Amino acid sequence: MTVVIGFEGSANKIGIGIIRDGEVLSNPRRTYITPPGQGFLPSDTARHHRAVILTVLKEALEQAGLKPADIDCVAYTKGPGMGAPLVTVALVARTVSQLWGKPLLGVNHCIGHIEMGRLITKANNPTVLYVSGGNTQVIAYSERRYRIFGETIDIAVGNCLDRFARVIKISNDPSPGYNIEQMAKKGSQYVELPYTVKGMDVSFSGILSYIEETLFSMLVEITERAMAHCGSQEVLIVGGVGCNLRLQEMMGVMCKERGAKLFATDERFCIDNGAMIAQAGWEMFRSGQVTELKDSWITQRYRTDEVEVTWRD
Image (cartoon, rainbow, N blue to C red):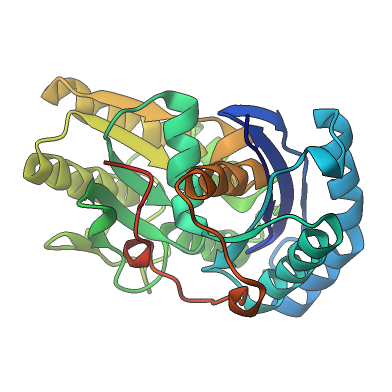
């Protein structure tokens, strides 16, 4: 049996999860929440993470019923993400790795979302829609890489939702996107708005009134195009925005029309969490990868397709 602990803190959530051969043993998490109308600054977010990370680590071990000696590898988010929070988590992961005498492994945040989604849903080889506060990508696996078929050319879909929430002072608790979703459920009239799909890419900047219906329609369209190109009959939605039930519903309609299957997870695993880093780390560690201490830096820019996927055929 291989046990991996994962540290995630690339944005406003700090999570530590433990995976043992595909089983989630623990996955505690904390969220830095700011007042309505405000975003979260890197320095303040890092300060929050520093204040709670050791408590979350203790919870992860206690919930899993494990001791440091039971851990085989320490995984952490290498990037992409916000610089200061990433550094905070990487420093703790490095320290824990040295104190416990365990191998260290830097993980791509986006790959963490994909591997967690594949683990939980049992999707085989899906076309992946990755939607979050910092990323919007349509991805498919081919020849040891997760290839990006389409993406935002400006801001991410989650960022668009967050900005809209700030403009009209929607609460950040538990998250702006969740609160927008609840308000949208009460809507009865669709207002036609600009729809900007450019080939396989999308553009969200400058038109904050997109929100939900038009925005999600664009994502469904480019996902369907990627499916057609790859001959795929599966869609997996990952990332924080993937929790949105309306997005899942719209994607489900498209999949049904194509005779395809839709896979998605709930907020336990869609939203940034430590277990997803542990799961990707588990896959990487089992395929022989480790990160030497001198190479255990972080990077704010780390594309999904830069990672060689050594654990898949």
